[in-house]
Image (cartoon, rainbow, N blue to C red; front, side, top):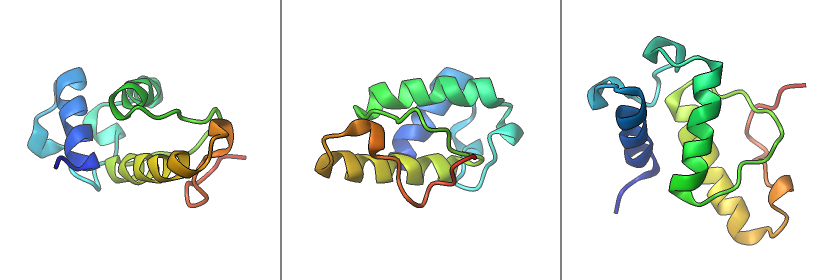
Amino acid sequence: MTTTFEQLRAILAKDYQLAPDAVTLDAPFEALGIDSLGTAELLFNVEDAFKITIPSRPVELVTVGDVVRYIDELIAAQKTTPDLENTAPKSAAQKT
């Protein structure tokens, strides 16, 4: 079974031409050459790949690990909550 991290690493390697071994859980997107627009684009790809809906609420996702945790929390929340707009994980750092 492929983990969330492995799937995300494959997406990043393919879409951003990154060496897979450069993509680690603690790697900041900025260090990988991915700016905020690139991160937003990544989230669209994540929705398709993981068959989830990302809420419109802004969250701060700085590292690859942040996105992995966010995806896992959304998957868990969306399995139990039909209201997809209100499924932002509580542990995700929300911007005010």
